[in-house]
Amino acid sequence: MAQGSETLGGGDFELWELGMEFLHWPDQRLRGRELSNGRWCQVLESRSGRPDGPAVVRSWIDENLGVLLSAEVYDARQRRLKQFSITQFREQGDRWSCSVSMVDDRRGTKTELSFDGPAPR
Image 1 (spheres, rainbow, N blue to C red):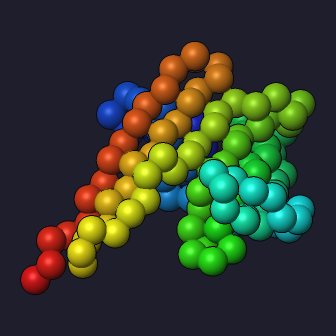
Image 2: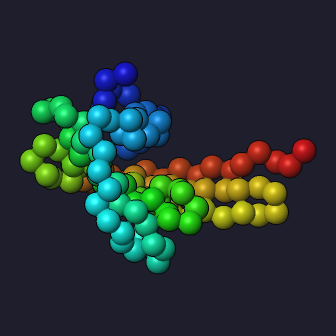
């Protein structure tokens, strides 16, 4: 799928972002550790190698949980295009819930999604 080609319900999330395709781009580099939402994270920089569209994604991955907490998408000129973040991630009994947001700097819009895990069997 071409990046930037399809959005989820017309919102700010593009399908390649939800599928985290950037984690499979050819150039991956750890850039150190930083705090994100009060948690220590490894900062991963992914480069697409493409001159058009998203060129770089910086991801903050929680060191203890291995969960992507936030990410920023940049073009080849290092202008931020989007910012993704987990706004809530919690366990309720045997069920997990998660809320995420995406801010599109180009359009000046924000989309929020909430996910609830399957009910216990």
